[in-house]
Length: 193
Image 1 (spheres, rainbow, N blue to C red):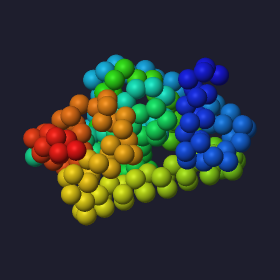
Image 2 (image 1 turned 90 degrees about the horizontal axis):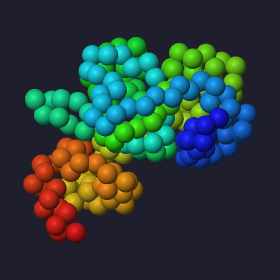
Image 3 (image 1 turned 120 degrees about the horizontal axis):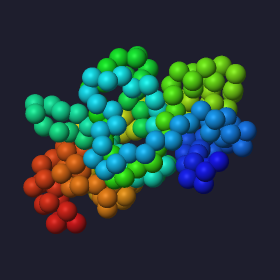
Image 4 (image 1 turned 30 degrees about the horizontal axis):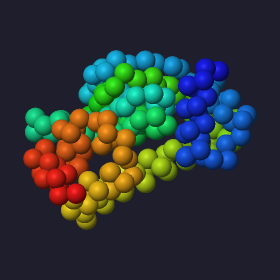
């Protein structure tokens, strides 16, 4: 097993499913396919169907979409994160979300159909799959609640507190769209901290 792959599986397991055994990690490893992406590469385009869950080993990705001609960031992912376009992957339908590498990245692609087959015989992978879906749903709910109930300043403060890597590494224009504010508003919020 390459060192980065082992580190990635260990990191994701520690946050998603800490009880995962060495055998379960080996089963997961057997399903993963390494992929490298260049900075700026669109790894999943609008209109394509997502067939993978992505485990980020190195680098930063963002999920984004266009609305009224504007580029809006939905989510950032970096080392130890899982990327999934839930609707496209689960329903086998074209996505409106795109995935872009913000940095040179190394990811591990988990083919969805192979994962589903493996969950039928592996309790460990079945639990792992359930845990990443649960986590994805929670992240979506937390983000929706943030948009509904928090001020711009609170949204930025929470991003800084919970995901400082995003603030350090992502372009401010993407951070602003993720937080549902203009770059000018983000500049004012940052200046007031």
